[in-house]
Length: 326
Ligand SMILES: [Zn+2]
Image (cartoon, rainbow, N blue to C red; front, side, top):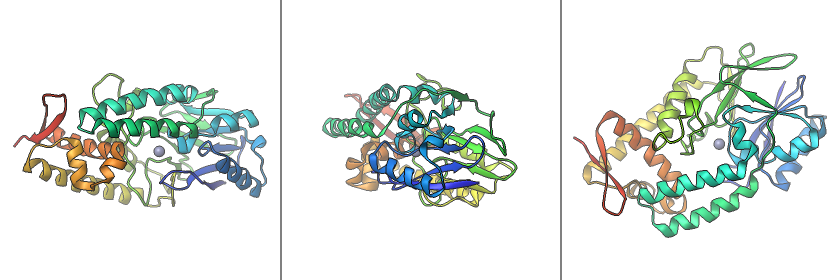
């Protein structure tokens, strides 16, 4: 039996779904952000099902975002549970602070290069630092591999690396029941952001291989998920379960195509930086959510670069503008 525990987060996305697998070992997939309120509600939700935190025997993390992993250190300490994560994700969880710092450095360089004013970049950097308090670290006891298995007394789940929303996104597929625990790979009510982060190797790309192309990586992963047999439901990291993943993925592909065409139109009018594109699409949100919107724009520009309809040029001052290649 898989139970959904919807745990509050201080973030825009709202509650995060953690999943309790009542089996041997008793397993919690994702843990919620590192906050007293999240810990309280998690404890109460476990209690409603007749369990305590100390009863947990295994903790599994789906990906590197703080709303999913923040309490991992506290829960691991209190329960002494085995902690499992994809091998590529393990070093991130083991040293969350330094990984976050390196990701902030990458984000800062990208924002400046794509035209976001320095004062906005500086402000975002301090916001990001304060967010880190909701993260957490622990030693990973079991490193999972892409294509490998996570075994229980009563079920076996296949471990599948599906990067794009983050470099570490991992799905857990019970082929017998058709259930998939999907983290933020697919969310029914919102399109998952292809957030640009440091590549971790494997399908997420190798570090140092140029600007990570998160949306292209994400679409490749969605294509793989679309082809999966024996999927009855994807239990998502936020909101309702996904019951028709093929339909949802097709809708996402259509959305990304529409957005790419819209951006293509803006670039045809005149050369623009990614920041200028974000501003004309989203106005002031391009300032308050500068990194999120930058990742959205760059993701779609990558599709246009790949089809050859757009070219990029670095201008004096080091800012990149995209222009029509037609
Ligand atoms: Zn996420």
